[in-house]
Length: 331
Image 1 (cartoon, rainbow, N blue to C red):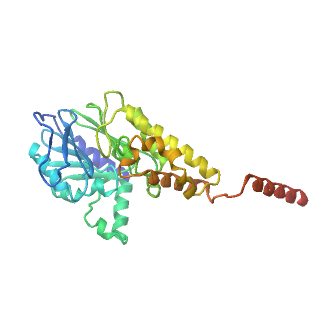
Image 2 (image 1 turned 90 degrees about the vertical axis):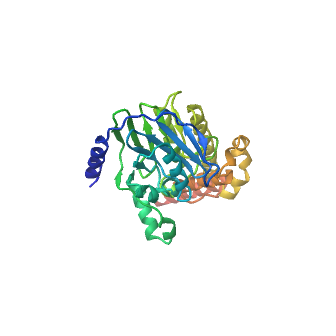
Image 3 (image 1 turned 180 degrees about the vertical axis):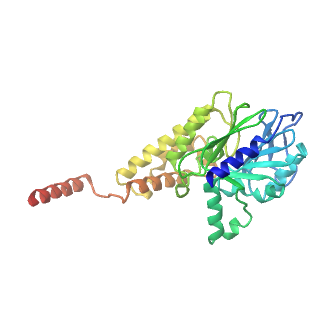
């Protein structure tokens, strides 16, 4: 079934003959529902819509439109209005970079446009799980993908090569790279510049995996790459490096304290020494606060390390001595 899906996907995309002929599009803030919505130019053919719900990528082709993410159900109509002002061409393909509703909440509206929706197979499973759970009201407006995959795909348009990149085992997070244009949409692998990321270990988004994803961004990018995070403004490789350094620092400190028997409350009490220098740079000014990131990484450490060992060093030594004496007595 997986092979059939990938084959069907490639056939569909290879049949497209898109030529990039969009010009004279100006950047603007929309006068619609959301006053915070902004339409930003990346290349002559590739733009992104930025609003409170995150970022949407738009590739304007001669006959069709290719989208990356659909934001939220409350914002999609406003965003669609902006897109239609630029081009009346149909939206033929939409890639969801995540199962989170701020990435696929507008799928229902886009699907009514006749678009084919693509996602990681885990994203489709997560949406179906929501429908079967007590959170059915959340999933009611969601539309899962028409085509799914679990490995990297390279799509060759006439004038563009699009790489859809998976970011690790058990993770639904995707990135979309327009090779010729050197534009990379990272999804929430890079949540937002100079902000703490959203970690969700239950859904495969750990600090360690996020660092691996950020490293992958660096491998794919150069100083000219336009890197569009899941939320907020375009970033450079320097800001990706800053996010890696921040997360690595927090990971080392929190893991060390957990290994030394510190409870979550004790670690939170030492917050100023862990996140202080990043808080002063505004990392905690976004949706994710310093307490949130500490709690997420601590829980990640606890999952790996098991039950907390609250014994003092002397108690550990005494217990070890007793174990040795007991073993000697058996011999």
